[in-house]
Length: 404
Ligand code: ATP
Ligand code: MG
Image 1: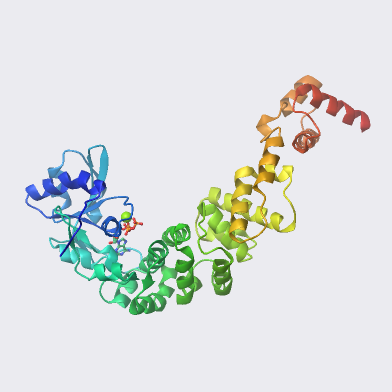
Image 2: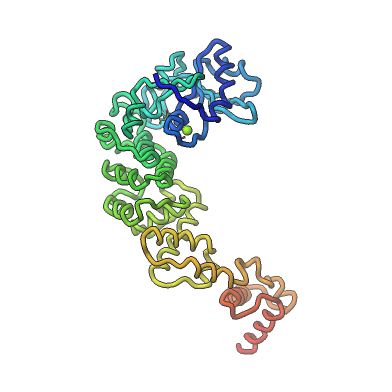
């Protein structure tokens, strides 16, 4: 049995929880991704705990708990200013609609719980003495950088197709290869991706793009043909591959918006919002990605202008410039800074006049004319032809009214 020589501080802080549960006569272990990451010496996030105590029993052990998913066996324990998810050992029954397990059964055996987990490297348990419990030879897989399903791969992906997306996501974050039978099963059952919730696929796809080895994750996804069953990506295998190759092998996306914009631009998607709507993303996300793609299109044609800087903001322009840098295209970050510095306003709200000012001070009438005039003023300020103060603006209006 392997033993971790140093227990990361996140686990040390949570040790009293394991001890309390054990004192009450139950088993308790650290489980899931945090154990994998600790063995790999990677930073760990949420520490998950699995226990033989049933939720009602867990609740009697700790003074402060919150029911977050009691039907799944999860109780949130608040202690030492932190929150820990404590989940009862469980198994999952036959899956009826490919989304949810039809029934969760609480069990008293750690082995049963570990068996239902997706990949061997996600199926470790760690006890209070830092012993790693490895029932499926996950340590060898970690050593050999291999992602392998727990048990019969085809069964596991047939039970829950989200595991297919998770698999490519773990390839992208760990840089692992996929064991042959596991990969074959992921490809065989990829069609079931059409049955699961798009939101959950999006979360995994998005995590994949944001991961260090995103190109590897995406290339294997395409090799499996899984893109065929994802919204808007049906016939995009070649375009996805060339997108991967177009960016430097160490290129990292700075944000999800940037990643999706780069991808959708490369795939020549015209209706960006429509595409992202099919993935059920937020309208803010759709808007932001759409803006970035517009900038990519502009940038293909010409240099950026003050108006571009005003319209999109320097941060968006720079996000596009970073993408271009990753593709070895010409970039000019200084130019964006210059544009930004010479802008005297960054939004309508910063204008020295409003429609109301013009009505009250100059007696102009409300209506489309006033809107047009305000827009002309706004653009003249942006272009640097008009100072942003009332006096200059009133003069500008006087000249125009005389002209007309
Ligand atoms: P991350 O480091 O991104 O949090 P993780 O491995 O912790 O990755 P989670 O989604 O947080 O992944 O899930 C925690 C654990 O629960 C996994 O390590 C795995 O053991 C199990 N798990 C999660 N989702 C599934 C699933 N769909 N099928 C089987 N096991 C799963
Ligand atoms: Mg996790």
